[in-house]
Length: 153
Picture 1 (cartoon, rainbow, N blue to C red):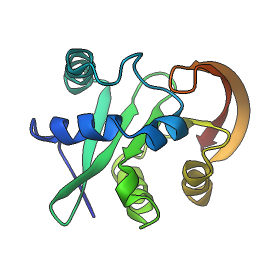
Picture 2: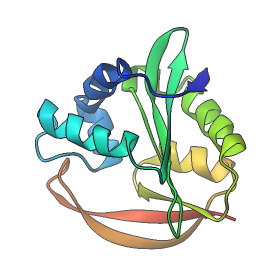
Picture 3: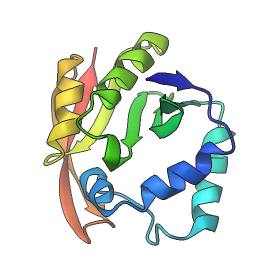
């Protein structure tokens, strides 16, 4: 596993990952129409051109596995997305470890829907603690869900 800067060709893989129903349910958020490439491209153009966002591609054996980023504002927040075909292989864990070594500003937060046990486990093993919860509407689930607000000091 390696982290690297995002290449324009990675966006095709990120878009394909966004189409995975199980990943959308675990993330609990998505665009209203995840198949709308124009909305996706606009969103990623904003991410890649925002000086307050550090984003990396997660790559394994030449394959684009997912992405990891931090919104570096008053309360920096980490987000990651891994294709379902790479779940359970330790790649997300390795990516988070590598990213936390690169991005050292603390405290760092994460918002994770409560039933996303895989992501919660990855974060807890890195020292994140649940410091609160919030209710959000999930387009992917068409319902209100509870997210854990997690923090690494």
